[in-house]
Image (cartoon, rainbow, N blue to C red):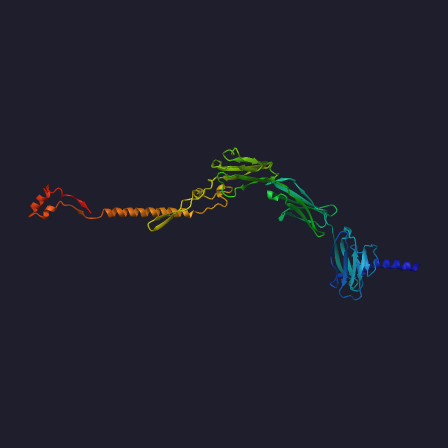
Length: 442
């Protein structure tokens, strides 16, 4: 029994002493050879690291694994180091694979795979311990913002190794932050990122996200929703009528106001005049019955909250009440048939010359026709043609009556006179034949 204990103790002492003696007594320093290979390891604190020493062409040389202090962890398949966290995973002529569980920051360093040859061959495996940061903390300079104002936010990721990186997102848009890295006394890193931006009313309710990138963690983030206050947005909606506004009808308008905080006061007014006395206002609704043209003008809805006041306008233009269009009449002149139509007074009144009406203008006549009345044009042309024909007929009859030969009997005595003197005497003195001196028109 005593001999067995002595043998075990001797073996342990040999395993500890032999590497040191080999290192001190060897004439040549260990060399790095491509025949012996290993890999660097990055492991999260508390997890398990695997160290593998592999030999490509082994000639029965001994493989061992040393810690950063060059203490033997495994000599072949024996573990002289009394640290139960090291466990043999695989041992063969070509590989020595060891696991280290529950890794801590003190385990970080360079581990040595050593092959006993002449000269000894070594390969180095660096173990890097990753320590994830704590939960990111996001802070805002202002909890409640007003549109158009600038705000500042900070995000902090504490006690990590290596230092984390921080990104910012506002909705789907990435923001640019300014990071600051601090090294703490325990060789940990604290990173603080600061971002500044201006808010608008569209940012209300939009999330601002701080995203922490680190090898030890994935999708590590903190989020804060923006609360932005803004002055009201006002819009007038025409409930009735859906076309032209005419005399005798009822006008119904609704004022839609949205803001943050919600507008508490909504009022109606008429620009440069008073609202009709019989108009009814209920909240944001305006009712005017029995319209007439004296109500024409601009009606304004005004809404306000602590951040400001906004308004929207509606231009009212009242048209004549609709009338019945008379049937077309037909006038016949000799063999020419001309059809005339009485112009529609309603159409002439509904067509307002000028530019296109502005928004919320009742003159826009939603659904009302804007084309020219061709019947009116045809009637005017027919009347003009008829007048020209009548003028031609009158002129023709006039000229016909005044065309012919002018006959008198004043030279009748010249036919019976013997000479010229007698003819003149007979023509000038023919008083006896006064009954025959008459003029005829044919």
